[in-house]
Length: 495
Length: 107
Image (cartoon, rainbow over all chains, first blue to last red):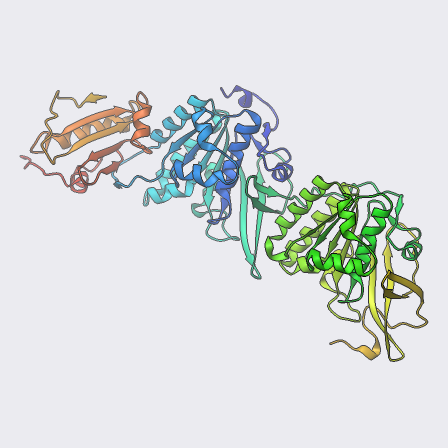
């Protein structure tokens, strides 16, 4: 039964968990014939992870599974997991899944004399045999220690024996264990030391009022893995969806094809337009014309025969359509022709990871060749700094992989100049940066535009004045003398 | 399933006890648990129904009783079942926990 693992030399075969990003972190999934401990605080998603591992085996790989539960009754697990799209009850009836119910009986119990866990082991062996299981989940080991208070030493010895027996059966084993804090000792009772080859940590951290869920591979015996915490989200109908940052390598090809920004004068300033697969940031204070630039960008693409997608997080569709019409651009007609899709969402409607998934889904469904996001600042509001940075990396990488032209807008915190957090975060990630600023000259406030950065291309260095009217943005001549755009002018000192 | 050594002594009185000892094969712990159970029954003033179940031969019964550790002694009771995990090494404690009566043992 176990000869496929026992006799082999070299690392064991890895089997996919069904969480694509996790399989990238572990470079293939979890090893067969090995035990993986998944540690986490209550509510960190351990049971979901474990169930997904089984569900993927059953539904996608033809590998049956056994679920050993120390905590919840099987009926409760079946009900709780239905929302993720896993019909455990059905699989149980079809003989593809077996439960071993070791949830605590209501009887009074006491330990008198010596014992072993042969009872558990023989029931597991029976279940594994009855469905010819390849994967097994034990949820959660920590619960056992509460069964056997005062008998920790024999319990450790017995758990070691059980874990060894499961591995010997050639099963891929996932065991969950409780942690008492997000950072600190790996698990209560230091279970990882005696039952597991591999250790995975799931976290659910509250940071400045925002929840951030991550998964991290701490140890993968005899095999390499990607280090660091990968953020994830739990999606109904899908389970855990994670994004590995380190796999987002900068391997996208750089296109030399130029596309229009939607404004011929701006194209000139950029040395002939944006690049096909580039991401551009337009940053400016409120009212400087960011949404206008976004509108031109979309309309320009559509006029050139492209499809465009806009994601709005600040204004409603009604407002956006009215604004566009005010600049002579008819979004409604474009949508009717199937050239444009405008999707507006409240930033607070979901977490940042969920927003990312929504964007990815929309892009894959609608297949646009350019995408605009208005604005990043609205999204920044709902996340921690680390979470936001991860979001940006994932999003930018995704857009470039799809070879789409992207335009992000971001609001500067000060009216005249200064660098906002978004700018700092994103300046290294985007290919181009366009600044929009108010510029005071002789008692008059003007609007100015500057191409700050244009990766792989020459671009105009001066600040151009521009005006806005019923047909949109009009770039004019350069300012003769403009104040420092970053620090704010001497006459406009910002605190 | 087998009756405890000593033949049929399973005359359970109303409101009295029924004992099930779950063991996993013929291990030293199983043997000790059997012997301790035998002694416990002998010291009881009335016959007790006591049955030994080897879960390796009857895995379905182990599932039904949700056996985790072995040996496990389950004391069925009309109001509240009790279970003792281990080889019953300390009979006094078992008797006390299960609330059994005890016949005076002659020295």
